Image 1 (cartoon, rainbow, N blue to C red):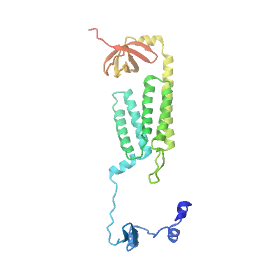
Image 2 (cartoon, one colour):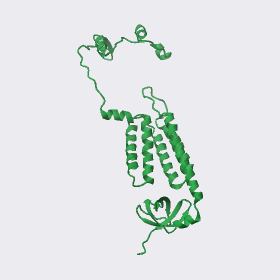
Image 3 (cartoon, one colour):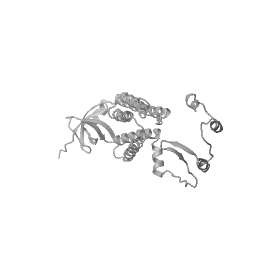
Image 4 (spheres, rainbow, N blue to C red):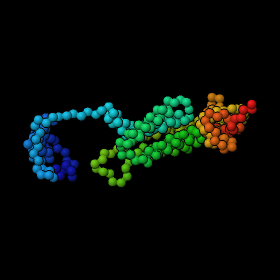
Length: 276
């Protein structure tokens, strides 16, 4: 028995029985109960003689809910739920009215937190993953030219590594959990490529903005789709633009505004006043 611990020695079933590593060998539960009957066991309360003849064997199967919780409590699944949930919210923010991405995002986030409640989660990892989502939103909203996108990718990788990383002494009685590295690198790569595309597109659009186009937007009426406080999102025709209210006031969603000026991809707007 000492060799199995100190030297990591392995034995076949018969070798373990011959070496007194195990007390008996049974092929199934019925045979096990038969061999255990009459066996004396030393406990803290004294010697106990086992009586296993005629015992009823009951099998307990997992419910559908337990199977579902087992699936989503997989570290890789919970990580994906966090990512998909966050990205769903991002899509809904920049495409208000789609409903679907927002609903899916909220459901995925709720399932992710339900799953994390069954795992030894490091909440610092969760914060980093949610920070990655925030940086993605900022990259799209303020045109960070990829800087915020790089931050989002790095934050996602760090969050994935920290998500189930417990610092200090690891308990030998607690299983070890982590996110599959290929999944982590793959998902981070997808986010990185997407953010690179967004950054390059924003840079290209800023270079292509001409004075003629700038003047064509000035004076146009737009609708606020994300509250200006003072920065937000407006819809000009069929185009979504980042906008800032000219006097710093808060302009709520649904209000009509008028474009006063344009600086690259950012518009300065004022609350539209109907001359009538």
